[in-house]
Image 1 (spheres, rainbow, N blue to C red):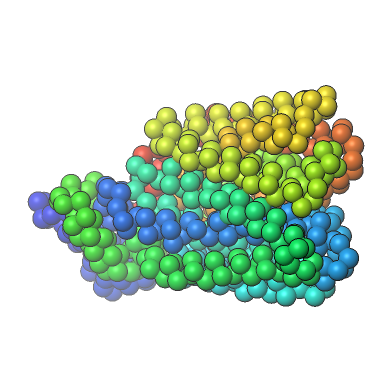
Image 2: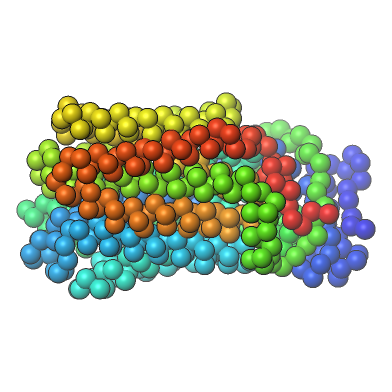
Length: 504
C-alpha cells in the first residue's frame, strides 16, 4: 500500500511518495506511487516559470521557420552559376525538401522513442545539438550530395524536437492554458519564416554578399540563434509527470514544491488545494507493441483523427509554400530577389492565426475550433484556386488570398500537434506525436514537394490550380473528420483525457 497524504495536511504533501511493496521511493522495478503532481501543476496560475518554459522550448520553432523559408527563398540563387554548388532549383524545392522532411519523420520516430524512455529534457537538448551541427555543416556545402545529406540530418534533429518539445510543453503547462500556449508555440515557426524571408532578401543581394557567400551566412545565422536557445533551454526542467511514472517520484515532488513556493511568492497568495491524487504503477519503459495496441486498439477513432489532421495540413502547406517562389516568378514576373518580401507577409498572417484564435481553443473548445479552422482554410483555398484560374489575381492579391487561407490553416495545423499530444496516455505521448507526425508528414511532406514542385513549375495555370485544389480538398476532409471525432480536451487534465497506462 503506497503512502498518501493525511486529510488537511496541505497541498504540498498531497503528492506523498512511497513504495513498501517494491523497493523504496524512486525504484523503477514495479512499485506503486500515489501523487497529486498532475493536479498541482494544473492548478498553478500563470507565472514567470511558465514564461521560461515557453521561451526555452518554443523558440526552436523560430529556427525551423528560418531554416525552411531561407532554403525555399534562396533556391534560385543556389541554382545560379557562381553559387558554389552544382544544383538546380527543382532539386532544392523537390529532392532537398523531400529529404529534409524524410529526415524529420525518421528523427521524430527515433527520438520520440528515446524521449518516452529517457525523458523529455535529455532529448530536447540532444535534438537541438543535432540540428545545430547539421545546419553548420549545410553552410559548408561544397557539392550537391553534401547539401542533400545535411538537409536530411537537419530534418532528423527537427523531427526529434517535435516529439520531445510538444510532450514537455503539454506536461508542464496548466490545463487552463494548454491549448493556446501549444498553438502559439507551434505557430512561432512563422516568426522564423518572416525572419528567413527578410534575411534571404539581404543574402540574395550581390551588392552586399558574393553569390557563393550570402546563402552560407543565412545558415550560419541559424546556428548562432540556436546556440543562444541552447543556453536558455538548460534551465527548463524535466517533466514531473514523466519523473513520477519512471521511478523518480522524489525528484518530481521536489521540483513541483519549489515551483509552488516560487509562484506563491510571485502572486503573494497561497495556492488552492489541488485536485485528487493519482496512483500509478511505476515502470521504466513501454514497448512498441503496447503503444501500438493502445493507439490503434484502445483509441482507434483518435488515431483516425490524428492521421487526418496531419495529412490534411501537410498537403495544404505543401500546395502553397513549396511552389510559392515559382508561382510568383512564373505567373506574376516577380524578381527572384523580391519573393522574400511577399513570403514575409504570408508568414506574418500564419503567426497571427494561432495568436488571435488560440484562446478560443480553450474556451469555445477543441471540436468547433479544429473543424472550423480546417474547413475555412480549405474553402478559402478553393476560392483562391478559382480566382487564379480566371486570371483575376496579381502578385499582391494572390498574397492577400494566401494570407486569409493561412490565417486559419496555421491555427488548424498547430492544433494537430496539440491534439495528438494530449489525447493519448502519458507513457505513449512522445511516440504518439512522433508516429502521427511521421505518417502524416511522410504522406504530405515527402510526396508533396515532389508532386507540387512539378505542378507549380510547369508554367501551366491548370497545374497550379490542381495543386491548390488537392491541398484544399484534403484540408476540408480533415475538418469533417474533426467535426465528428475531435475530443473535448479543453481545460481538462491530461490524465482525465487519457488515463495513464500505469494507473492502478
